[in-house]
Length: 137
Image (cartoon, rainbow, N blue to C red; front, side, top):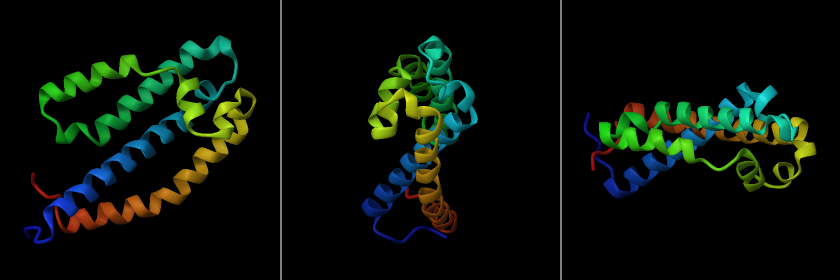
């Protein structure tokens, strides 16, 4: 069945869904790699930064990559090598990310809380677009 809704609104909703799904996948990847990614030791920064890059790459492959052509995918995959260090990413997440001493417990809890709140919405939106395929541009 062809989508009959308002295309600009549908496109905006769809790309917003992809972003939320991408962000969820990054956070899930960080949590899967928590022993390294949330280790507050500066001695583990290199390993943790790599874990964050891997989480970002996996998230990209699951969300945006299927919508990009070969050239854009190649550029996007190279861009992950230039992600800022995890400390910059974690600080952007707020209070528990700004303090290394909170990464192991409080930041993990904040990430899990965000995921618990966002998952139902993302699941519902994915269901909507499964019934009414994403708009073409």
